[in-house]
Image (tube, rainbow over all chains, first blue to last red; front, side):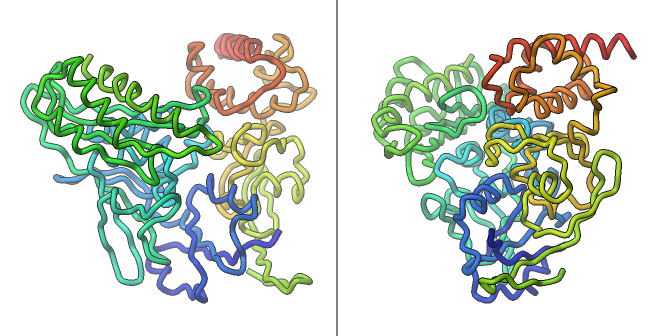
Length: 288
Length: 170
C-alpha cells in the first residue's frame, strides 16, 4: 500500500509551515471515514497529503460563552452524547448522537470530520442546520466563520479552500421565551436500527409550549446534494399551534422541496415517499 | 521520521510508534497511517485481534483504548502513541479466563468465535461503567459488533450472567 505523505502537527499555526507541494491537503481526525478511503484506494498518494490534527489540543472540548455553545472540531459523538451543554442548547444534535453509527465509531468520529466529509447523508448536518450552527475555519488567511448551510458545495465537496481546517462549531444560544422549552429531534430511516447510513433523515428544533411553536427550524438529510433547510415549512409553523391539518400541509411542501436521487442505498421514489411521514413522526414526538 | 524508497520510488514514511499493549510497553516502526489492526496483527503478532470487514462495520477488530472501545481497523496507528491498548489477551488467558469469557462459554454464546473477542471487550467496557445493565443497555453496548452465528440471544444472556457474577464477586 502506498500511503500519502503524512504530517503531524501540535498546534494550528503549524499548518502554515507545511509545504504541501501543491497537493490537496486532507485532515485526519478520528479517521473513521479517512481510513476507509485509504483502504479502498480512493486517496491518490501522488496528489494528496494528510495532516494529522489529533494532537491539536485547542480543537478539543465543549464550552459556552454568553452567546454561543462552542463544540471543538475534535469533539466525538460520544463527547456530544455525554455533554449537558449540548443537551441544553442543541438537543437535535444529541438526538443524532444517540443513533450515530456504533459505540465504537461514536468514540472516534468527530463533528469536524462529519462536516468536512460533506456526505449528503451526514447525520450531524441536519441538526446543525436547525440549530443555525456556524462553522469556524482556520487557514493560511486566518480565521473565518461560515453558516453551516454555506459550507457545502455539493456531495462530498465543501467551500473550504485547500489547507483550511474546521476548528469548531458555534451554536447560537436561542432566546428561550417564557413558558417555552427548546426541543430538538433527529430521525432517520435506514436498513436497521443501529449502524446505518441514512436513506433519509429529518431534524427539527424550536421552542415548544405544548402544541404552540416558535423559532422552529426544519432540515432534511439525504434527499438532496447537501442538507436542505426547509425555511418555507418553518414559516408555516412559526407562532402557530400545530394541528394535524398543518402537519399535512407541511408534509406536502416537504415532499415538494426534497430532490432525492437513487443510489445503492435507496431509490428516489422511496425517499420521496417516506420523507413527509418521517417529518410527521418527528414533529408529533416533539409536540407530545 | 526516516524515509525509504520503494521500487516505485514512492516515499514511504515510517515512524517509531510507542504505546502500552496489555500493560506492556511496545513499539513498532511503521507507516503512521497504517491501521492499528494491521500493526497489532502483522508487526506485533497479536492475532487475537480479528480482521473482519476492515471498514469499521463489524466490530471484530474491537480493542479498548484508554477505557473506550474502538475499531482498530479504522484507527491510524499514529494516534495510538502513549495510549493504553487492551486486546482480548489483556483481560484473560486460557488458564485464567475473565468472568465474561466464562459466561460466554457457559451460555453457548460462542459458535464460530470470530466475533467473540470484540464482543467480550464491548461487554467488558459496559460492565466497567455500568455493573447492573438492563437488557437494552446490553443491546446498545454490543450494537457495533456483528455476530452471524448466534442470533445474539445467548450473547445477551452471557452478558447478564457475567454482570451478576462480577457483582457477587465484588
